[in-house]
Image 1 (spheres, chains in turn brown, cyan):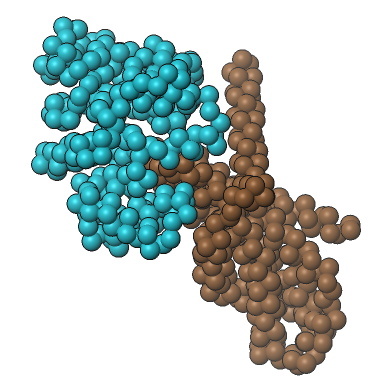
Image 2 (cartoon, rainbow over the protein chains, first blue to last red):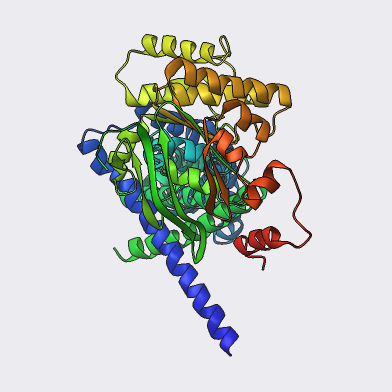
Length: 263
Length: 266
């Protein structure tokens, strides 16, 4: 019995320490992002642009390809049910709404977690192991300003941009399959899609993507700074970063889906 | 501690703990301006921890560290940045930023801390690299350098801001004797040319004899000998004698038990 209470207590304490460390990281990032520039300590613009390009432009080929295929798959699956009722014209509605509100933001976030969130953890973890983070501090360069803020800003700008493109590409995938394979009239498909989509769908998708960006970046950075030991520690935390990030993305997704359902 | 004297670093009653474990106790010493001060000791004696405290990567449990008469331990992070601009550090594994070229590594502190024009920074970078014998290697990445060259590049980066004091963590660790001797000669050259104060953490006896002016020997987190190189060499402290005579611990002896207690393997 004592052992059970002991492990529960240790688990709770570790959870609280973890939460406290995340809070410190969040406050520190916001401090260097918002407060410090007001005091004349500028942002690292060039580094931020580099990170933005890395997270957005370089991830576009894989995000684009996967979103195109998912759009096509969705159209096919929708047709499987809707054809029974002679309602294949509503494929456009289903693909459009699902892409904008749900699948494009979610797939973009998951792909960027695997591609960029893991890279952030591995980079910071390796820098920690090889004493590069210590070197920054000894040089009087703040690691948050130097490393985290450019990644944070880059990610915050990149995820919504990539998401909007992913929405479009996913709908193109659905359009392509519907018109080429299922034989739906292109004009009818476009008309149907245009009628189904409202601005709120876009707002829902973009709002989600902004919060997904926060999750990907903060989890990636947090796990990177958690690295202890050598290469093994980097590998362990990188895996953990991807798993934790995807878990929180789904949680945030559930929250906003519920929120926008009622609002 | 504001009296102006020749001591650039003053350490007073320093105690450092990891959780409940005390790793450094009652550490007090002075480092004089322009000298090479060597912190010597066996594995696990706390010498790297002491160095991390001196450069502000850790805060001590109690005690004070004064740098140029200013209490470094009680300073805000912002005030520390100003002090750090006047110190450089060479890490054991060189800690060069792998994503940058050697030139960018050396130029980084200048770009971040000075309003100098890029062309001036380029010239200064070249001068620093020439100084350590790496002229022409600006565009190389750290991965393309050998271990000794990385240490030299690390030294060039540490020298970038023309520091008053430079800290070396195991400068000759992992290098062959010839390259290690080259690094020792470089440390001497920096001291002679720029009247630079050097604080060197090492356990390499050959290096100590070449570079040290004064030595502080640590054992089990305490100072067992402190003074001029010759004085420490002549010390009759049993640990100093054992260290100099390279006598191994008795199997399962006190030192092994001490290291086990530090690493929690008791």
